[in-house]
Length: 289
Image 1 (cartoon, rainbow, N blue to C red):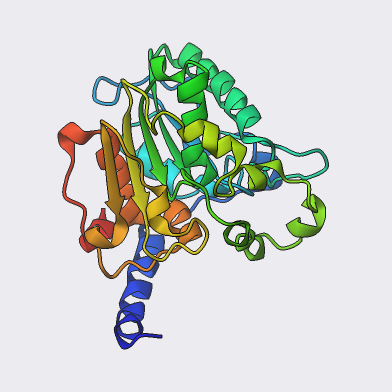
Image 2 (cartoon, one colour):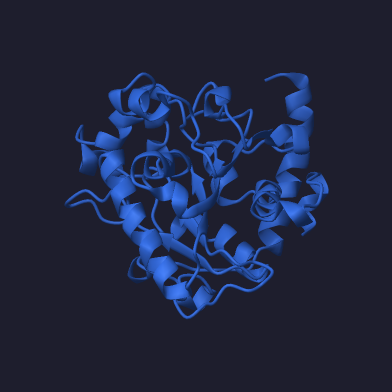
């Protein structure tokens, strides 16, 4: 390991510990994976405020689910006055809890239906979407091919697989989910769809990365070991902002999973992307609130 990385790792650990200490404790069980109203999100009685007129839809990553991926970010946004919703998508038969494994195009159809449900319940004309990993890329299919551009104001991707990665990168997620490899075997369409150069990604990115009328933000980490190289996460086009986490806080060593599940510095930048008119500069100190 390089000497400077050895030097800043303890500081990074302190920042992460502080982030966890300041984050409201939220527990999840298997029975909660469909919704988490007790934690303030997936509450279909929530009505968007004047300050935050658009509901936020959270889209988990590969092997994730609607609760576990968002135990920190969902309460973080609820505390700031947002109506927050999350869905499960990409389920495979016989594989409980670990989702985002089905064909990405079919998952986008599920997202389309879920956004319709959220808009119907809240009365909002548009939503904002925040997704991690596959969840930051998959909504682009909804925007481009399923009419989502008329229903979405902004898409914020946290370590999104926008231009794919190697299968080796995707399989590095497996140690985070013990036992899942034996359940899914080789039949995981979402993994194949996210390999760089796949037919799905070729069609998705053909003719440009973006669609008119939607604001895009990508938040990446230099230490991403899954979607590599990290610059493949970036988008090109109008209304795009690509952000490298270490440009905001050089001490932050979050990798692919941590940036989407724990990192309050990244989440501060998510809040800025959702409300750019009231954005506050993101620094290492943003972990304090």
